[in-house]
Image (cartoon, rainbow, N blue to C red; front, side, top):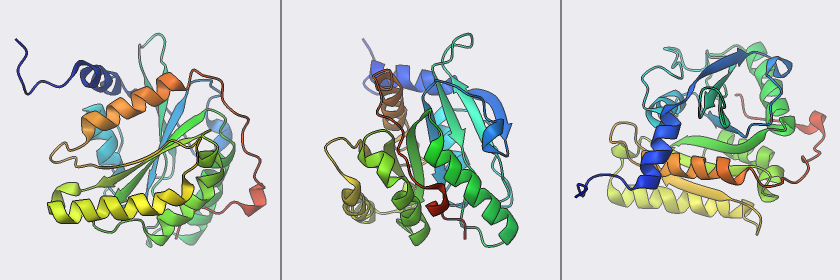
Length: 243
């Protein structure tokens, strides 16, 4: 007999898949990233939203994604491969955090363009996981990022999952309110083609870890289907949050 506390088989499989994540490469420019047909899932968020911690928790590894002691100092796109070592089936992309005031303006502007280019033209981008501090909710910077990726989300070309991190710090009432508020904001992106979700997440209590792993695994599997052409948005109009 299987213990009642044991996770369902699909969840175990998804967690095992997430645990297979390993470092692939790092790049400071878009043209340094490898050309690939593997579905790519990007993790984005404010510098103090717990992005690196969430990636490490999801992968059940302590130092897969490097969490800088100084928020906002990580200025590279880090790629991680998942699946069998001899035949990976997906990539995680850890993008630099945004919104940390201590970062020099020149660095912010440079990363604004790198992130804009990545989110706009990276053909293998299949999904975006936006990490948001559940105590703050969607900030103006988060809203700006959502507006930027909205064209690709609305067509279903890119899936979106908003993770409300540090959920262990909220009461049940506060958690429900955070979910409701985020859901209402994301409703503006909803279309018949869009795949949008929002969930509570806690690295400390492991809240949402299994569900997130399963969601991302399903994204990868469904990415095998034909995809619509990339959205053509003028590069000069691209603006992603960095300040």
